[in-house]
Amino acid sequence: MSFGLDAAIAIEFHDRRTHDPTKFSSAWKNKLMYLNESRKYLNDFVRSKMWSLDSYIRLICDGENLTDALRHYNTLLILNIPAYIAGTNPWGNPSSLNSNTNNLNHVPVFDRDKHSLSHVATSLSYVHDSAANAHEVNEPTAVNCCNTSQCEDSSTTTIKINRFDPQDFSDQRLEVVGLSSRHMAAIHIGFRGNRIAQCNHLRIELCASMTAHMDGEPFYLPSSIAINISHGGQVLMLRNDVR
Image (cartoon, rainbow, N blue to C red):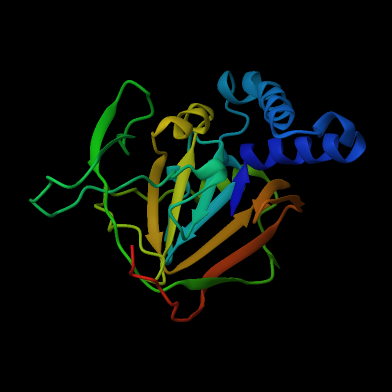
């Protein structure tokens, strides 16, 4: 699930395709139209701070207010699998603690504490097989947060620099990632976004109307609501080990 820039672009693309499907008759045309819709937002998202999500969203992970971590980011991602649009991996491949690196691939990723493309680190890929699970999205509830100043005043938690565990879709935890407009392009060439948190329970309080995107479907969320996301169940999966 995501909030912000990527959802806004997806909604524009969806509306244009609905009104004139003849212009979207091939995958190649679809990519060009999507790129064109993205271009329209460059001035708003690159040259101004009007879409800095810390002014619109209050983010609480396992009871800790992490709203300050959204500053300068235009998209908030909530992940449970190592995949996003077009096969990208915004969480990235975390550094392995295994000293034997002969069979591991090196992948370039963003340094989690830097906002510039010039700051690059090297990470070791990590392969982990596990059972699949699901996460529950509770019904939105009304909150008393009706303007951006209230969100800004509540963002007082000091963000600590954490070492994150490898992403595992059976650990009953969610990965939270922030993306800037530059990250949105760079994740398609192997870079990652900014890792914010790994948590069991996530609460997102909206202080203004916000675009959202879930399972390929973009939509609008009204202002002054809260969304609670937590683990909703887990089942075993069969796996074929024959290669």
